[in-house]
Amino acid sequence: MESVQQLDPSKYHVLTPRGRIFLVIALVLFVLVVMPIAIVAYYTFAINRPSQTADEVTYEVKSGASISQIAADLASLGAVNSEFLLKLHLILNNLQSNIQAGVYLIPAGTTTQQLARQLQHGMNDKKITFLEGWRAEEYAIEAVKLFKGIDYEVFMRMLKDKEGYLFPDTYLFNTDVTETEIMNALLQNFNDKTADILTAEKLSAAGLTKEQAVILASMVEREVRSEKDRALVAGILGKRLSKGELLGVDATVQYVKATYFYCMTLAFDVCPREEDAANVDWWPQSLSTADLAIDSLYNTRKIAGLPPTPISNPGTSALEAVINSKESDYNYYITDKNGETHYAKTLIEHSGNIAKYLQE
Image (tube, rainbow, N blue to C red; front, side):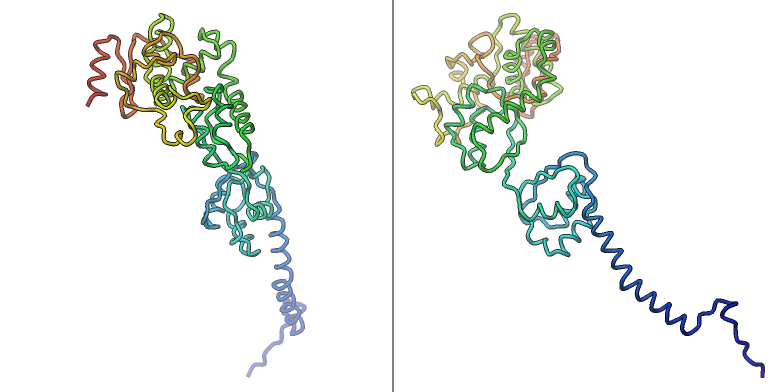
């Protein structure tokens, strides 16, 4: 029987019993000490690493939203570097149940740890949207709905002579915002958003003053839904204006009719009053013969020229259409119930369009 040959550990690198013990101890120490330290170090680094977005992010946490949905949304917006890391941080620190609903302004470079902390405290801000083509009363009604400190009549006294210059947009205000603060934000946003549209050079080329351009845009905003048609309609209205013809804009009659029967015998400086305003049809689609004959400087079916002031608050699309109006052979237009605009060169063609697209 052959004897078993012993291997020389120094020659073949075979671990001795003592070496095996040291290896086991080293592995245990690596798993129990080094790896946790490395993981904690990386975790600490990761949650304190600034987000990569260069812009401030606005995000609304809706009541009942899950942390998975919140983390996914914030990651897609670039407000957080890792969806998984945000969820992990919230869960490890038992913060997921303390997230407050609200609208958040998240600065560029916010870390995951800062964001998690921000989500615990909520925001004392509310988001409000004013739509293109709304009139001042509609702005005031919306503001009163959302902000308890806003007085409808006080706000309307401020806004009424600012019609046309209250830029339609989505805004973020503190819950204790004042009427003056909202008005100033609307006016400043108008100046900012129209600075490159209503330049002296462009107004001169269009043959308009700034006030005339805004009045025309306020009508185009209400008359035409499609952006592709707005410049053409602006051209038709400009043609009528230059010839001294009736503009014949139904939206101006709607503007008058909405408050005419509430206010023609009342002496209030704000009319209709707040208790009636919420029930007013601000843009009545049905106009009778009597409506078209209402005696008002705003009624462009009856009086030639522009109305005295804008009838709504236009967005950039309507303003750009007026500044860059298109000349055409068309003299008439209508917008059907589906928002499509139809054109005519003659009154006979126009009457045909009315019969075809507007009369049932």
